[in-house]
Image 1: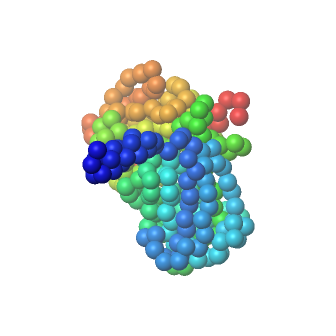
Image 2: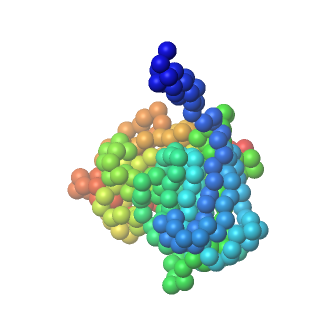
Image 3: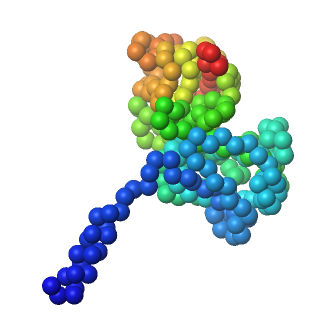
Length: 281
């Protein structure tokens, strides 16, 4: 056989032996001194399926108050990362919650000082100030495998629950914002992140009896359109509420629409989220 044919067969044989990485492949959080995953690599933290880690950056031999962005290699969908200005991971000062919305070989979080939806992740920034790069403490939680798949629970982990709002019906179009709870019970009452855009919502890793109010009014008023949703099972992996302007009971949830002028879908202005503590936990 000519030499070129031998080489071609060898290449085909090698390609045929390539296998996808096994489940449970270890990922890495690579932290950078600059924005957009640029500049000096301050440190790296390995994370695998089922990881729950709470640490200061100093404890990980990282430079304190130097970090502005990160790259998550072998990113796992529904992994969550909390970054805090305070060294005790207290949330009374600057803090950021990042939830990864898709598994990918690499996801770059461009900066911690913003809130928004990006390809591969959502980010919520609280208590902003003028001092950047002050990351001192972090918590990371990566979903487990096997029986724990998609639960967001690692060994000894606190519950990680998500309530995600979407621009379209049935969890379609853009995921306009995500609310994350790393402890249950959890209660939140505030104006929605993007006014007059939400038409549907998903519950993920939430216990039965989770409650959500969506209001047309900005001040939670019941004199204008609003709906009350209660989940009837554990949302594992998730429950999709297709729209808000309906009263019905589904196998997964019950919704009651309090009608005033027939304009709630795409007009949500304020929300109340009430997630109870799961039974037996």
